[in-house]
Image (cartoon, rainbow, N blue to C red; front, side, top):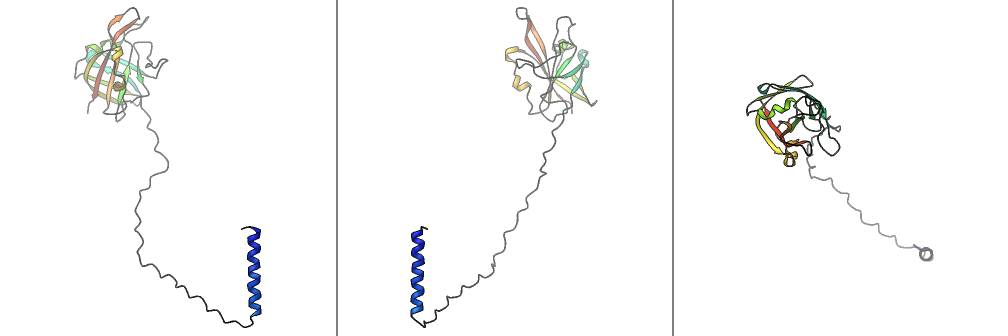
Length: 212
């Protein structure tokens, strides 16, 4: 409100007071009609819904139990297993010694309720004897594979398939999957050796499923 408006309002109030003072006795003004008090509501309150309360703190993440040994009696394989990650270039890291296998620690482990436990090893390497996984090609469906974890628990698997994949056609996303049914995936090299690049042309992949 501007000063002019305020001044005008005060002037009008002064004039009204002057008129009242000049008229002498005035008729009493009738009181305003009483406003009835609102009556209490008769509507019943809305029933409260029972909402389940969950703990505010998240559940602790499950700690993996790494595998430490793979044994396949049918082909005379027994090989220790160590944890490995990813090397430069995005490939799975592997122990240099073919007599030691690597477990992909960013994937599932034998105690996981789903996903593939991936264990791999070189078939051979310079300055080392040929590795135990060179025998994977001789596996037959139904052969038993035993994986022992760091807690001392033995996990039994039954071989379902032995497949040769050209290295460029290896179904990486499928083999390293962390969803779906639990399985054991064993990987090594195989096929013809390409001396021009110093590598085997294929990967030998064994798929085994848990024995109930």
